[in-house]
Length: 275
Image 1: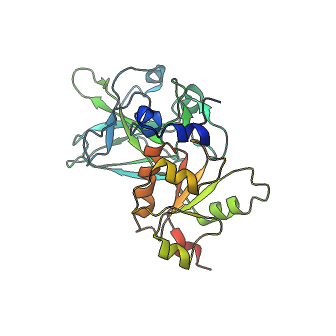
Image 2: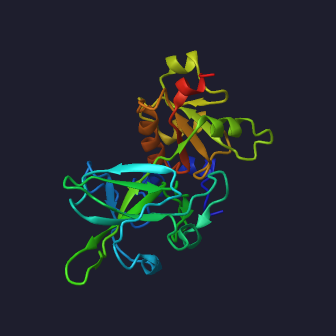
Image 3: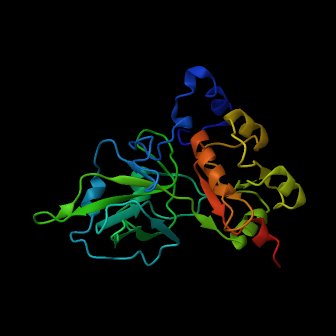
């Protein structure tokens, strides 16, 4: 199946001849740049192209929040005092099969309109976007897009589109549900991003230890993960607590290595051990 990269295929992509393949690309979407336009904003720019999705943009830049959103994302480094439209794919259970591009976005229901302040900061609320099968047959990391409103003349949405990656959150109840799934149909892999010493003291049952302070190669990761792992396998990453950054650091590495269907148990082991 084109939406999955199996263990054998991922191993063969380690050699020098195939090092610059999609599996090691930093681009979060099919036509995104591989480098952020700035570290502060965290945004990637779409290199080319436009889509039928523009037909679903709001006619006016009226501020509108996504009332069904589950994720709050605080953006900075944007154009100051500007109106933005943000949109992502529809939210779905990340253990289900991957949808095609056109079905994943549908009519841009997972969207809203916000405005940046004088310092270029804004808050957007989106439901966790699903990963999807792009038109090139590849799967990319979880993300959403933003477009600026142009106030000149009659006003219109800009032709440039930007992309922001997102590390969505799950809670303890969700993790427990995945673990208690007796038939293991979800196939979820849980990863502990803490150092080996912390993992040895306490970890979630069945969790695989991949310390974030190590620079992992694809071969090393494949040796530690289950044999049936692929690029769309549901993965939950955690570290110690909401203040811990190890999970996010490992998430960045996992994206670069080609594992895109990742979620974040932000409560971490400290929350897990609470009664």
